[in-house]
Image 1 (cartoon, rainbow, N blue to C red):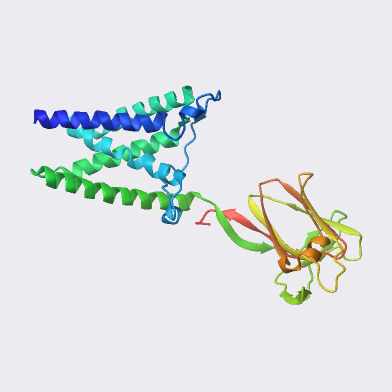
Image 2 (image 1 turned 60 degrees about the horizontal axis):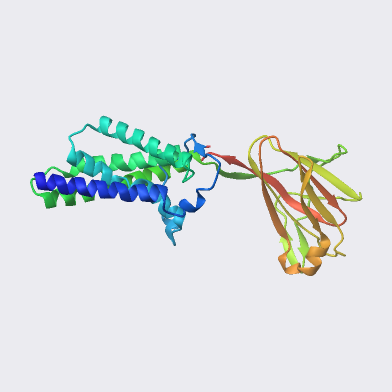
Length: 311
């Protein structure tokens, strides 16, 4: 028993040194030590989420780090209670405090940042290891104990992976159904219902119109305003319908700053790329002004509201 304990202690110390190396010196951290900005992240996000299977084909460095933040700390949950009889509450409390200290040292030495999400992921990994140890070490045979612990750890990790994915779906907003703008006023106060033909012709192709169509009509230009009441995706399709001399222009400003400008010359030189679907995210309270000039037209104008999956 004494010999086994010494071996376990040696493994624990060596593994701790290895983890400390990756926390403070790996990934080029030493080269970045001349930075003079302290980075502290105290607001947790979905720290349960791990990279999805699609993210791992092929895996990137960030994907591996995402797994490593949890997996690399599972052995501590096995080795420490194997060495010392300790309750889960005492173990995870002291472990979390130790991780917070290390995260703080990372930030203060400019060898990383203090990230509460990392600390939580590290502690969850240790908790998985502790659970695997309690489930696995129930036999007299050391070999059977190790196999049972490894299988328990794998099952617990897969359960965590699934739980993280489920929580991510619940707290992440997704695009809702498309809502067409069928009554749009320009800056002169004139209203347009977006009356439209069934289709238009562009580059020899018949383009069906689903919802609406807006243009400058008989005016030199016409400006419409869209103001978001929530986080949305504003979208429309545009182009110069036939017959056309490729005149016209469309510009978009967001809160007074131009963010998009298009002229018919683009369609003249790249006809195969038209019509074009344009989409942009709009934050609550932001105002878009869409100015249409000449023969250019936009259609199927509307927005998709960002909402939670249960909405």
